Image 1 (spheres, rainbow, N blue to C red):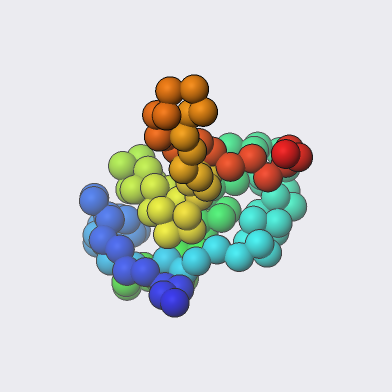
Image 2 (cartoon, rainbow, N blue to C red):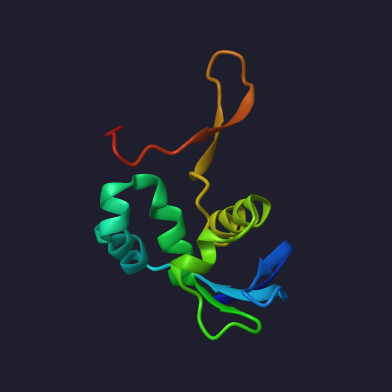
Length: 120
């Protein structure tokens, strides 16, 4: 199973020296990543900061940077942030599970979301 994925940012992170860094690596998220992010004081005071904290924990490398912290994620261009958020959702299979179903009246086949919270 692949757990680390390479990426190349559309625009790139610009450091203090004006250098652009585009290539990096993102690992699969764990439950601890999500739980830890929810407890972060920055997220508690501003829930929209959640994706910044989570991405900072799962991005293991951006070439040329000593570390990836929330401050690095904050300074990404919005297109790069959107790219990383989409990548996070894709590699962690965030899409809800679906099942194939057939309408008993007309016989039409379709996919329906699986609801694990409701009996029956």
